[in-house]
Image (cartoon, rainbow, N blue to C red; front, side, top):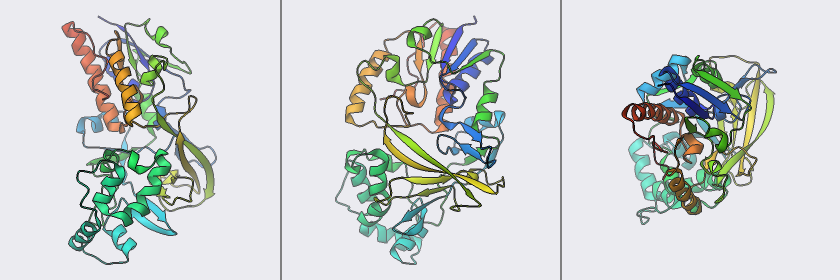
Length: 383
């Protein structure tokens, strides 16, 4: 039986889950408060320069999930892209992530992989076991010199707190290599959509069973008028933030244009404490198959997220986790709503994981309806 389904959010979660359900014969409305689709991975062609700009900061697609890779390529051809990052520290440029070149540059050496591994191991503070926070994880992994140069101030600027207050797991996501491989990611599928993420999401939403409503802010009361709701807005917003706001970091972007190639790479990190921003992104390098005489760049500065700001990074420290647990318990008592995505589950998600969870959630809904079972509030627990 066809049902009336509401997707709150026209980002990856709402688009992918909505497409699966529309293809299964359901009537799907996808609503978003913004005037464009694709959420924070929205891309837009700059009229002045012709550069395809990642409006809310760069998004690089990388995955080991073959089904997800095939899915995105169904709607937009992905061109291979190798993400390389550099960092300017104390007036010198280094390769990131930390690899054999970075280590040899920084210490003025010419070590082989085994020599560098032993050298870094001798720098590491081995008495920290197990590491209890970001700082201890860094000191245990690389020692004080590399940590202070590349991570201590950068992390404090990014998160607005001392690294010792952050969980160790944040650093575990960043690779450290004892080879000259400076490919930032290690997944087997890596690429960029030829015409941008917004074009891809628009094609996902292009189905006769989907009605798209942009510029529409949906309240929970309005959402409940539908047979089922998939909510990819902030989890706490469903409850009107009545127990408090879950904490996020947001980003301010200082946009500027330049002639030619301004910094020579897509991303330049600026870890030094006396530099207010965290990095500069040059967007023409995210589409190296294109040629442009001019360039578009963003300086990024992180700060605390206010009620009217765009939330980017969930903080997930002790206070937020306690509040999250409260909201999750209440959400699990709700009928007719499933929470999806980065905001709906208050987790930092890469794009491939977002798509995987949206596919799984939509399929779980179809299976639950077929079996006459209720649909859970979460397909993946936020806790």
